[in-house]
Amino acid sequence: METDLKYEGYVQRQTAQNAKLFRDRGRTIPADLDYESIAGLRRETRQKLSAIRPPSLGHAARVSGITPADISIMELREGNFEFLDNYKGARSGRQRLYRLKNTDVAVAIEALGALAQKSGTVAIPELRFARTCYDHLAGVLSIALRNELLKKDVLRPRGGIFLLTQSGERFLRTLDIDAAPLRGLRRSFARKCLDWTERHHHVGGAVGAALLFQLMARKWLAPIRGTRAVRLTHEGERAFERVFGIRCMPLRSHSAS
Image 1 (tube, rainbow, N blue to C red):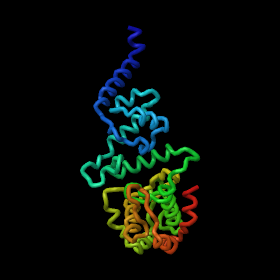
Image 2: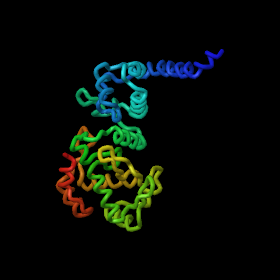
Image 3: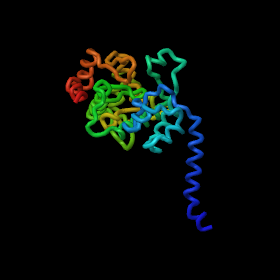
Image 4: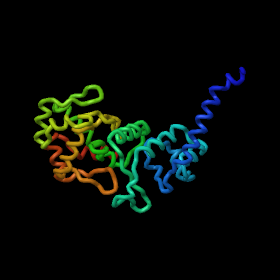
């Protein structure tokens, strides 16, 4: 009886673990999955899974050196991405493309990337300079934009959000952005989103999305096919300095360092 009580907690944990492994056996992993593209996975984990190619999460969990945290990140990927098999461009050579389900997933991935980023690790310069984070701008350029919006008193930080000032509403109208409808949307208005390369918060939410839309519509930024990186156009470089007071040439150098 004493022995049963002593090991009861261990037996319960082991039973739960075995049940989870059994369930995970049915959760298949795409044979062509690019493990290097999964934010948050350790380098050792990526190398092992890329070499072994386990057919399911259950098999991956039994690989030596693979931790429960690794499996949790894999579960996040499995549960919050959708295959694009029914869409044109779903496959690009040997790569398989995915679409994020919602903004919350994008924010979670950016945060995981920031936590996983090691000191001294350099991201691809184009991605680090400017990229999309779901539907808003991220990267070095986004932090510079945030800094200028704070300096001009367009936005004010408060807790996990940015507050839009009255002068900020007037400033946004010069970019054809009306703040009133944005406040009525069923999403955050102007939230702080942790940038995974810069380790600072850029502007997310409805305001961040509206800003990116206008930057694209005015052709100040242009998408780069097959990547989240966006390109600053010649007109955009002049406009960023004229409208926001941002000189982009030094930012490019910073992105490459």
